[in-house]
Amino acid sequence: MTILSMIDPAWAIACAFIFSLCVGSFLNVVIHRLPIMMEREWLAEHNEDSNEQEPFNLSIPASACPQCAHKIRWYENIPVLSYAYLRAKCSSCGLHIPFRYPFIELFSAVTVAYIVYLFGLNEISLSLSLLTWGLICLIFIDIDHQLLPDKLTFPLLWLGLLANSFGLFTSLESAVYGAIAGYLSLWSVYWAFKLLTGKEGMGYGDFKLLAALGAWAGISQIPLIILLSSVVGAVLGIAMIIGKKQEQQTPIPFGPYLAIAGWIALLWGDKITGAYLQFVGL
Ligand SMILES: [Zn+2]
Image (cartoon, rainbow, N blue to C red; front, side, top):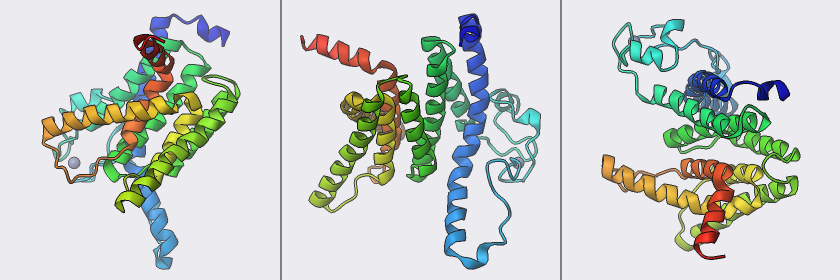
C-alpha cells in the first residue's frame, strides 16, 4: 500500500467521492431488484409451472422507465448529474424520478469520501467502504420491504471476520464473540418480548445484522451499538412523526437504526466510550 499512501489526500478523497457516487448508482439497482429477484426465486421454488420466466437479475433487463418502458440511455444514467439535467423527469413520458435515487448516490459518495478522509487509501478504507455499501442496501431494502436479506447480511458477516483475521478493527477473537453476542442479544430480546406480549417485535434479519456488526466492531462495541440504535431510532422516529405525521400503525423497521448505529460505533466507538467514561468521571 506504499504507492497509494503517496497520493495527495485531497485527490484521494475526490476520487473516492466520484467512485462511490457511481457505486451508489449500482446500489439503487440492488435495492430495487434484489427483493424482486428473491420473490421470483421463491415463486420458482414453490411453483412448478413458472420456469418460463424472463431472465431478471442485477444486469438484465436494462434499466427502463417503469411507466413508458423508455430505455435509459448512458447519459441519462450519470449519477446525480442526469437527475439534475433531466429535472427529475423521464425524458420520454415526463414521469417524476424520485429524489431518493440521487440521494442514495450522494449518501454513498459522502460516507465513503469521509472514510478516506479519516483513514486514507488503505485496506481499512476499502473494507469499510464495502461495509458501508452493504449497509446502505440493507437500510433501504428494510425501509421498503421490512426485510434484511441473508444475501447481504451473511457476506457482511464473513467480510467482518475476514477483515479482523488481519486485526483491522479488533482481534479475531473479539470479532467471533461479537458476532455470537450480537445474534444472541437480540434473539433473547425477541423471545422475551414474544413470551411477554405474544407479538413479534423484530425479525431474524435484525439478529443477523447485529451479528455482522459484531463481527466488524467486536464484542466490546455490542452494548454501544444497541444503545445507539435506540437513540438513533428515537431521534429519527420523533423527526418522522413531526415531519410527516407518521401513523402509529406503520411498522418502523429496526434494521436501519442498527446499521447506522453499527457504522457510528465502528468509526467513533472508542471516542464515544472514552468521552462517556470521562463524563462519568472514570
Ligand atoms: Zn417514461
